[in-house]
Amino acid sequence: MRGDAPRHHYVKPMWIGLNLLGFGVAGAVFGALQRAHSQRYYEVVTDALVAVRIETLDVTRSLAAFGAVVGTAQWLALRRASFVRWWVVATTLGWALAGSMVGLTSGLALGSISNIGPHRPPAVALAGVFVATTAVAIVPSGAQWLILRRHVTAANRWPLVTLASLILGVTVGGIVVRWFLVEVVPWLTPYDFPSAKALVTVGAIVGVVYGTVTASWVDRHLLGHVDASASVGDNRAARNAG
Image 1 (cartoon, rainbow, N blue to C red):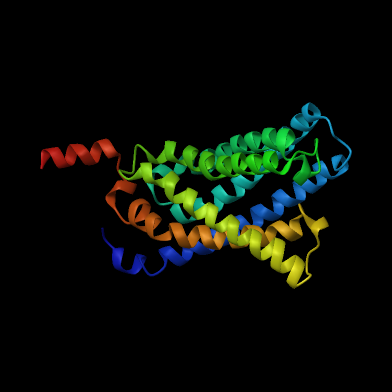
Image 2 (image 1 turned 45 degrees about the vertical axis):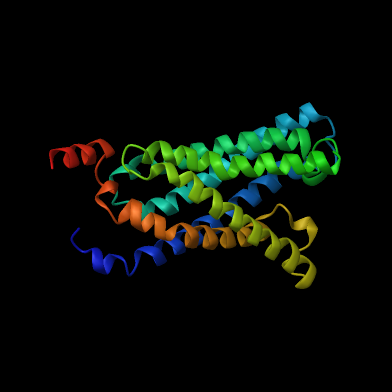
């Protein structure tokens, strides 16, 4: 591919930087929307069904906005690839679907954490966190996989790469922001969650980790090979003809 050598000097830093920017801005948008929409319900709504309705609606639209921002940032890095036309749409819809699953789970099981809905035993809350985290880690990348599967031969690995990067990113972001910036350096308080102030930092950390972990895979499979500009079927046909 013509121009490959110089391209490798900037693709990875660009991908990492745009994900830092995208996740950071998206985190701020998500935090601001959640605080504006949900704050009046904190410690007021204790009925599970009411909490499900509120949380599902609020988290779905907040994570849809989150996905639109992240998808747009990633599109800027991938914009020359043939599959990228539907990237923002797929990313937005994937995060929105994840949001509906997170909202449903939150209303049923996470009242002790979200302060909306009934307080649950720690075991129930922990199970709810697992379900919500799994939805966030798998569903958006699954929607992106629907775009990639006809264009990238290694597309089936993308959800696994994304899963690992988001789990690591959320873990690091949670420790740094929820512990270090609250308990060690008191820049935030427990009452700042959710808010744009708190989640812009979480998002930026997640973006850096996500971008760093996925950069080599993206460079190799999405931007570094002919697979990113031709369909899998075309590639197979070319190999058979050879």
